[in-house]
Length: 304
Image (cartoon, rainbow, N blue to C red):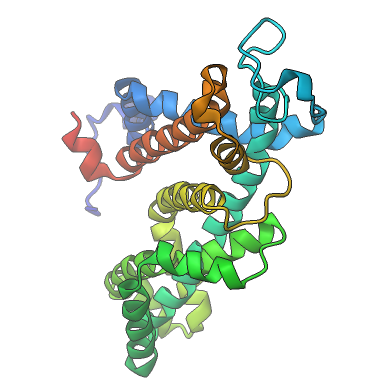
């Protein structure tokens, strides 16, 4: 930015009017132009909030053998499942564990990637070499195959345990991206100034480097949530996670295992959870892509 004085003909000098912040215009422009992103953000946030809140107010329906695979009706809008329970009610109850697992998993994987990636890039030397070699090793292993093997031997008796397992395997890709960004940011003048005044490595990383990566990390966090959701539903579909509680993965597994494909009236018992998972994932992707356009000026410029 130039240090030369403003010309006296500048209207903001003569009238005291404020110049509109360019970022606000970009946000309004991107939100207005990206209908899918706006819709995706609203749907994604509503689904997350509703999934966490509704189970506190909705009772778990009792099994009813007389209503097994009942067709949709005024009383049961999406019909009933293999246990005679209302499918719509089960859908509303089944999102909490999915959202909790995805949030915890994304937090763990992002945290590991940020800490190890930033330290490796900033310290370099043997630390960088060790971290990168281990990361490359993890990247060579098929993640879902490893997850399936671990799920057989690790006791996944709670959503938190499942989330920790998913998060513990989901960090390698982000770590390399974080390392690359820190390698670039550590050469900036303000980081060098922080070194000169004697700030410690954790302070420099936490105060000077990571805030400049916040937008990228936020976008990745959403994508990490979608990855955890896919992995969780996949494990339940394969029957590799305990069939306790209520979630969309268990609903799909139950419908599949109890012959929903062979009953004319049972379509919604398997299609409803599949559609809900698909809507959640699609809305998250739309939301993340729009955030990327909003927070990355170069991408925002290409959209004009």
